[in-house]
Length: 329
Image (cartoon, rainbow, N blue to C red):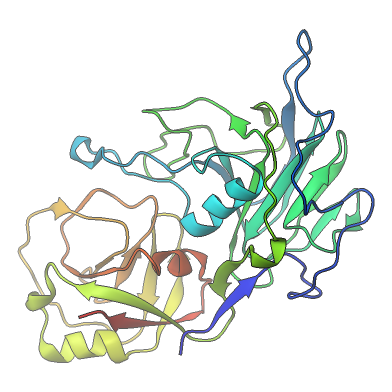
């Protein structure tokens, strides 16, 4: 059974349709950020990080197409939620935004802007007041927006109308945790510029859902290959029948699965290219699902590749979550 939560923001009432108070008014109609544009001759608008949380990073859609140069693609771990956040904020989908792991972020803006929050559902406060529905908030200049710990999933996205302005490396603002490419890790006191305010689209927020694991078994689909024939029929069956668990060894590079190890034994395999979603089996026999910051090559056999449609669920899974792998033939 695939148990996933389609959620908006309110932790108290996940399916609620309440609107925020006067400081956190949710937009439901077209309109720009009144009074939030940069006036000629004034300082550019900024976002200041007051608290960074344990693993917050700047991400855009990464550096695809450079694997032949040894450069990972990187980008958001949950691409679906990242794109949704930018759409809600009126930004192009590749606009830099913040990926927040397990909450703990607090920010303030120097100019009033709409901000969108998607991905793992979290408690959100503005100046200490809980937001009834934090999918889209008009954040006034000087107010403090704080993101708490998710009650499902692990990665939340914060997009600001106009987007975060930061240095780009090889055309991307994504922070790659494996290679160190991209902006420095987000820390308390970091200040980012934000671009000119954009028109916020008239998106019915009731349709703005993120999909994250909700604590029950999650089934993700995969395709066999390229090295599945190195495994016995019994081990291929074990891969699809085992209720795997996400181990504590999970980050933006990959998620190790725990369960009865596959008996791959000693394999003399030259290093070869890997891709997002690859299920690599190291000598321990415990599969690793590669995520956004995965290496571009590996010397262990890849038994299958998780589909693009389902890899975001793996990126949102927490240690201890049950994961089942379903082959697509």
